[in-house]
Image 1 (cartoon, rainbow, N blue to C red):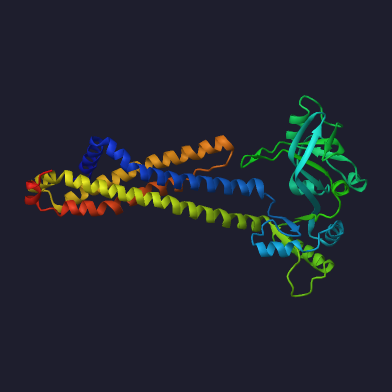
Image 2 (spheres, rainbow, N blue to C red):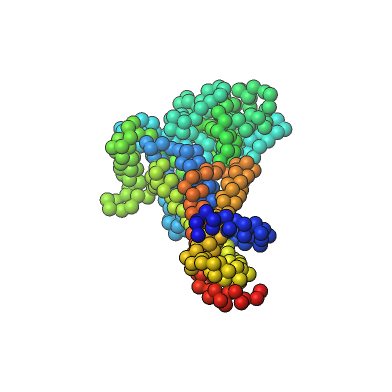
Length: 409
C-alpha cells in the first residue's frame, strides 16, 4: 500500500467518527498545550529576568549583608546575625577599589506610603542612594535633576519620583518643587524618572529616590546598606575590582584568613544562575505533570485504535483476501494512530500559544515562542502516536484472514 493512500484512508476513518476522534484527542491536546505554554512562559520569564530584573551588566557587583539569593533557612538565619554594612564600609570600598569606575551605596523600603494633598499611593519603593548609583542603575530622567553630592552631605529633604507617583497624585501638574509626604516626612520633588514599565504584572515606576543620608535620618541607621561597584573594564578588571572590595571589607570586618566572608557579593551571572536553577526546577515539574496527560492521551489512542480494529475486522479480512500483506495492514493502522496524534499535537500547540499570549495580555507575564518548542511538541505527539499505535496495528496485521471474514460485529 502506498503511504499516500494510507494517509487518505486514515483521515477518512477519523472524519467518519468525528466525535470519537475529538474525545480521543482531548488528553493529547491538553498535554501538548501544557508543554508549549510552560516552555513559552519559562523562556519569556528567563529572558525578561535577564534583561529587566538582573540587568546589572557584566561589570557590576553588589555587596550584601545577606544575599537575597539565599534559599537555605539555616544560612539565612546565620547571615542575619552578621554586622550591618555601613557608610564607613562604603567609603572604604570607594577608596580601595582602584579598578572600580563607580562605587555606590543604596538602601530601600519596598512598602513606602506617599501622599500629596488628599491623594496617596502605597507600596512605593523608597530608596536612599548615593549619586554614584545613577550610572550603575542606569536611571534616566524626564524632568528636573538627579540627587547630587550636596544633597547627600546636607541630608537634603529632596526626592526623585517615578511616573506612577506624578500621574496618580498630581496629574496635569508640574511636579518639580512640589512637596510630598513619604511615610509622614516632607520631601521636595526635584526630578521625575523615565517610565520603565512592568515586571511580571508589577509596576517598576512606583518609586522614590532620596539621598541615602536623608533616608537614614528618617528611618535610623540600623539598616544595612548595599554597596554596588561598576568595574572600569570587564574581564580581569572586573575580577580585580571585586577582589579589592572583598579584601578591604574582610579587613574592616575582621575576617581571619581561611574563614568565609561575613558578607555576600553577587554578580549578574550569579543571580541569573540562581534564577535559572529555580525556573529549571519549575519547568521540569510542569513537564512531568504534562507528561501524565500525554500518557493518558496515548492510552486513549491505543484503546480507540483497538476498538477500531475490532469494528473493522471484516474489512481487514477482505483486504487480506485481496492480497494485502501484513505490512500493509500494520502501516495503515499505524498511520491512523500517528495522524490522530499529530492532529492533537497541532491543536495543542495552537492552544498552548493562545493560552500563553492570553495570559501575557491579561497580567503582563512575559512569554516567548520558540520554534524548537513547537517542533518538539509536534514530535512528541507523533512519538506518542507511534508508541501507543504499534500494538493495535500489530494486532490488526496478525489477524487470520479466514477468521476475520467470519467475524460478526
